[in-house]
Image (cartoon, rainbow, N blue to C red):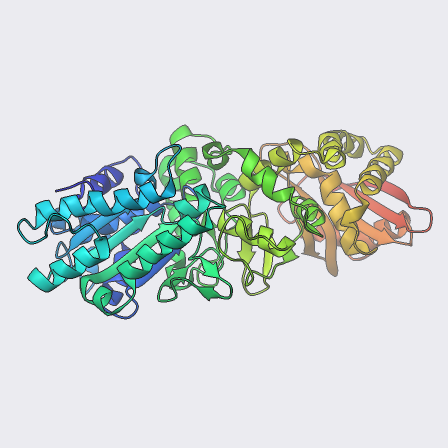
Length: 526
């Protein structure tokens, strides 16, 4: 066994022997279906800590011919599939993490040199006497071995996009690297020696102009993971099972780590954070601890029209249409607000609804990451709104209508750019920003079906709090009394089924002419 060639199954054994392992071996059923076909080249892009390396190690353990992995997989989902034993431990596996070949202060050419020389050294040990001493080109060497002894390879590359991320501006190095990948995975000789190619990283395959440099790869991304949706993170059933087993509050787990959603799997959780929460017995922002807030701050502070306004709206709970098609799949070629929002989707800072083509902040963990990034930025007016939201809550609980109206007005006037138009929908964005910290005590529901209509914003108290429920109705150019009247006439309190206790009815009206807010608060006891 080598470091990169036929490295065995020990890494995957460590994963399955951990305290928490969620069975994702069903992925192998898909790779078994495409191995040796035109669909054999797969690129899976995921955010940090979404299980990419574990999946890569699993495939290496399953296909590698230097070990016997039957005992390792026999109790998992893949063991019940038709082709379970057909491909197990039948191939030479080349498993590389590109970051292993990178050193601080490197010339990128050194990285490509190490990839070639280190892997070829191990191939010479695996197949002694076949390769000549001066043969040092990896694609050619693999073709030679296939021709000489019919060697067939499964090539797995983790962190495939590390060069694009670490050498963002070195276009020459990026193109040379892509040339190597093209020769490994594209062309007639590659079809013979590469039975399966599985590359994984944060970014999809690089585009040059409108074309992909590796257009024979089938891509599974955070934009569209397609048939592999259930392997992006943990599913709802998997998280429920963990919560039951380890006596964790499922609703809190959902609030903190759910929110990614795809056509085939509607609830997807950040896997690393769920595991950390279970192991620590507490909910927190575990994912962002693995990377600096500086990166997020740099992205959201870029100077593109509409970007700042969109970010403010996103942290206020809004969704935004995003054109993801123009993104060049690198970290430098940003040309618009949409390109920045698209990279944030790939990085996991935003979720994406493909049917509506909308981006949004998925959960409390990511919301707190945005909050930290904003507070490290120069967005002083937004920072003040976030910091003052506790005072606004206190004023609401005291039923201090004048203070509430003034607090909402201050947020609005300081952040007028988020009001692209003057209507009740835009006002709900102002309300969400003004009550930003309410999520510590409440679940916020916009347009909640209730009685004979939809309440604008409902604040449902969490189990851990004794705060009153709040129903907020917004009016534009009318009156706060009319807002209260609508709550009563349409029976919005009926939407609070199961809740017993005090309810605050909050009517808010905005007058465009005077730019003044009016507020009326009444108490209702169910």
